[in-house]
Image (cartoon, rainbow, N blue to C red; front, side, top):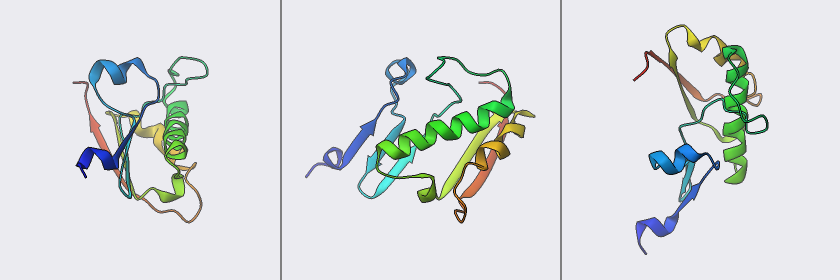
Length: 114
């Protein structure tokens, strides 16, 4: 069986996924990888200018991808947040959405725009 046969790609429907060539989430065997998740609110079709609102929205988007794959935030083992310098103040609000008892490894990366 070819490796690709074990892999399932999940899309958020974002046009950026097709333009850039990535999937929001990839299920590969017993593993689920979620990446490239932003704070875009698909209900309003916008991103809030308030970084404190962006953390919870990004976590909501991640939870949606996990749910589509048959998982939940309780299954998360590692989280990597990236933001411009000073932009991580909304992250704790997003992490508060993690289920009680879950303790994923958390890494924060600060940097400028590429």
